Image 1 (cartoon, one colour):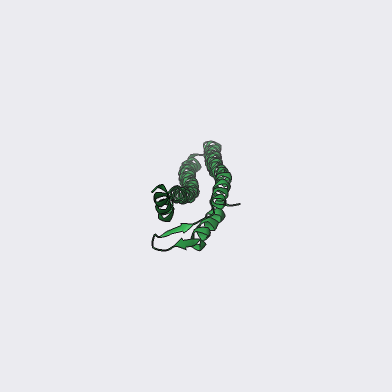
Image 2 (spheres, one colour):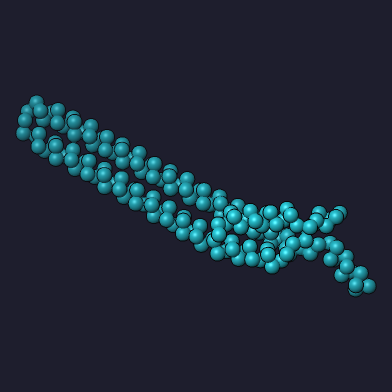
Length: 160
């Protein structure tokens, strides 16, 4: 079960729970809440694995970009060496090779920037999802730790 699904169920449970008049509190089934928290804990590692996978994919993209840039530079150098024996053609070849090298470097930079941005966007999305889930779980746990005022009043009356 997906974390967001469990959190939606938790939110729905809170919204549909019996409200206690005058105290802005609700009554909820503690076993149901604890079960939902267990589901969230079970789903969290999956979100972590997704973040790891995204990071590995980013590294793969960067490595591919580096290899492609290397290949282009190598081809440009080979072209330059092949044309080195001819006088006027040598000048043109050097110019073309330099342009190819610059293009390869620019392409490499663009691919790296794109890969970093892609990975950062995916990791940011995962981080926001996890932050939201954690905030909701903490809030739900905080609410569960506070007994409703009506129970506190009954306890006080019982002690008297």
